[in-house]
Image (cartoon, rainbow, N blue to C red; front, side, top):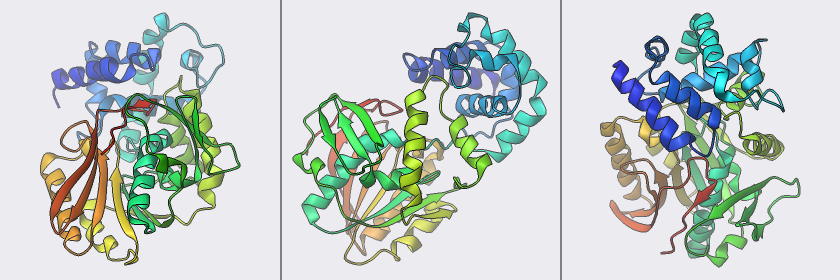
Length: 341
């Protein structure tokens, strides 16, 4: 990948993802975009991975086990971080000193943030589907990471500081702002879920300390609420019957669909995953889903497949019926725009 392409990736990341979300990462990404030495290191990242996310996560992961002045700029390591104006020379020195370790991490790790808060817009879709069909739901999540979204019916929800849905006593509450139409009344009635299957090229086993630390490193330094939510979800996750499968979803999904109970309504979903697939594989995924729909109806809930909008489609006998299309949500689901049918 050329330096110009990488530079553009870091600029887009800073402008579209980090503004009003992570001042530290915005500053670092803009600085890396004009630094050829750092772009050279970023060029070691596999082309199917988002370079800014992987580089910054790898640095934060290493910082967790190393004593280095750079940690003093990270809100994830100190309650009183140093102002970011002087961070870049310290950041660059750290990266240059740990090139070999970073290169290894680039080959071993994937960007697979398990953003639990995205359940805020997935959950109303699931309650709507369950209400319509009155059949237990069977989840298959593509790019499931650690599988935490597969427990979405066991979390509490607070929308616009007003509407609250209580599904658990442990205090795990997902808060998000709905900037769109009013959520359906069915959102207050939890669905029945009979199967939970997650597919990932590299599933994260939260029982392994190293893998848990990597998941933590993927959370941006200023995002304390995301770290708290992750830790609150872990006890719930441990009590659920979740099947995490290592492999390529496009190759496995048809076979896995045959293991779903016949009386269940199959729901295949993925968020912020499909953009990592080459375009031909995105079309192949759709062909696989169409083939499955020739045998049984299913719902497909997704974004970043052919556009950045959020979709809920019903598929049956090879045809696709769009149920709702929503504007692009915030990447970490701080807000979304609900659209009724």
